[in-house]
Amino acid sequence: LAAALLIHTPSAAQQEFTIYAAAADDLHIAAEMRGIMAAEMGNDWDTDHPGWRQRFAEYFSNKQKRGDSQTFFARVGDEVIGMATVSLVDEYHAYVRGRLSGRVNSVYVARQHRRKGIGRALMHAALEWLRGKGCAVARLNASEEGVALYESMGFQKRREYELFF
Ligand SMILES: CC(C)(COP(=O)(O)OP(=O)(O)OC[C@H]1O[C@@H](n2cnc3c(N)ncnc32)[C@H](O)[C@@H]1OP(=O)(O)O)[C@@H](O)C(=O)NCCC(=O)NCCS
Image (cartoon, helix red, strand yellow):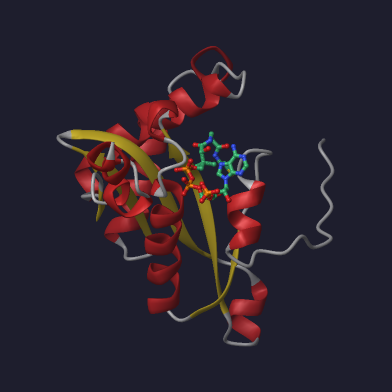
């Protein structure tokens, strides 16, 4: 019983995964995972946005090569089971006030690996990257499932509006 308990302590679970910075040429893996995430949220991007996978990989790969973005992967064994992407955002405060801002996108952990601290570890890596770039703020759109994680890390809800044409 003692051994079984030990295996299930959070610290033991946390040692089962690795977080690492993705290579710019590996972002087709991120696109695959983003497709799975969209499907889980009830969206079929292949029907709605044909060719999106290639454009996704291209966009973040080019941005990463310029030093303006980084994707992080979580790996268990040889399998990539989670991701988070961060980017520097071009907006006027950054220029006017010299306050760089960052955006977090595509935070995903495969269902069978959730609640082991992987999402939190991915977010830590992502936010550290933005801090290292000198960002004064990080922003994201939260899914319902992400709210608890983001709020526990200090994210606060603000008052941004949007209008679709
Ligand atoms: C959101 C998501 C990335 C969290 O990943 P995860 O690896 O399970 O997160 P963690 O194990 O690091 O959880 C960290 C904390 O967040 C909170 N949390 C995470 N999932 C939660 C859930 N389903 N319900 C309530 N709280 C939750 C908890 O406080 C948790 O800490 P605890 O397990 O010690 O209680 C994952 O659920 C996911 O991929 N969901 C589908 C895609 C999605 O919604 N992504 C976010 C887009 S903005």
